[in-house]
Amino acid sequence: MIKRFRYFLLNIIILFIVAYFSILSVLFFYQRNLLYHPNENNYSNDKLLVNIERVKIITKDNIELVGWYHEKNLKNFKTILYFHGNAGSLENRIHKLNHFNDMNVNFLIIAWRGFSGNKGKPSEMGLYEDGNSAIKWLFEKGVKEENIVVYGESLGTGVATHLSQNKKFAGVILETPFTSMVDAAKKFYPYVPVQILLKDKFENEKKIKNINSPILIMHGKADQIVPFSMGNKIYDIANEPKYSYFTEYDDHMMEYDENLVSALKSFLNRLN
Image 1 (cartoon, rainbow, N blue to C red):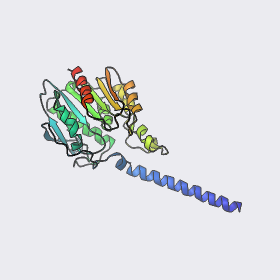
Image 2: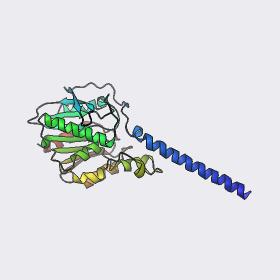
Image 3: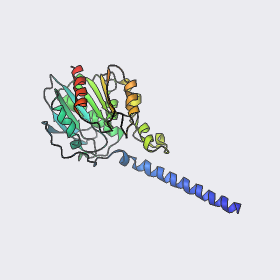
């Protein structure tokens, strides 16, 4: 009787181990499908109110990226380089871009590889190349490094932080930043060895110390995806001059209301 019980218990343990490692295998091989969501749509047919030029940016690995470019005055105004998050197309950011029309700025927003009809598959290194290609494109337009404001949204903060290290950008804006993708993933997969399995780590916490440009951190305390504590920690680590726009009720998709837009304008005015 005892032997039968032990045998049964052993089978249960083996079954649990097999199931656990099967789950780990699925997570490892399909993790980028869980991280990047190019087909997700969360906009409501917003109408673009700002004039844009649809441009194409070629990366070093020969991927053609779609971009929207708005030029108001390159000589007198700063140029925002906008890196979007892990979901949706450029159209999902129209409600934000419309507010840029009321500011004295030029802007370029690019779609990542695999997003908005672009070829290729997104990855950490791939997104760094996409962002770097956008910077080079602006250089070719005559925009100087010290006139670029790098803006990262959610996942885009990983690219913005990486590319802003040891540079002389006019400023850096991070909207709902995370400390690292490992930390963010642990929130959703607490029983998985994320540190070992995760391919795209985006280690903002380690890199933020290398940014010496003026920086604005924006985060809502009600964020259910990237905890506010992460954005607050990034702010604490960041070098001066640094500014914050923290709200009580904003979730991960921050409300682009009068207060947020005012915070953006105030930050941009400090850079002139």
